[in-house]
Length: 157
Image (cartoon, rainbow, N blue to C red; front, top):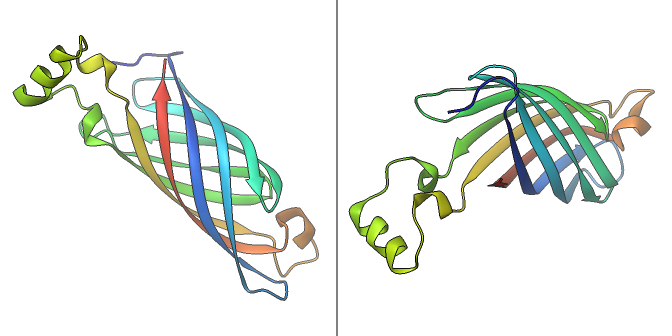
């Protein structure tokens, strides 16, 4: 169980589509991010991400999130600093990460000299973002009006 000032660190791969105000209406993108969730209570956290991206070369996000302790699902909202957007993201944990594992899985892990704590935990995320495309400030959003992304996070200690 997480308490105030605990953190979860992760790597994230992300694929998205951007609706733009440029000649090409829809532009695909991909990013690889390093991130951390810093919990301020059992349910609330700050989420920070920094990474490399195509086509923008770099990306960075800062947001505030909430975790449902019963289901493990998350919702967060914040600002993508570059390219500038506001976002809302929804997270669905990988079921392998739950504290309950089947007897079959326990036996399989034991044969390898491991236990439940050795499972690679992850989370699927979907984010919806609004940018500054089609405004005088569209360069700040890399001409993006909106982005939808799907990503997977791998958590580690």
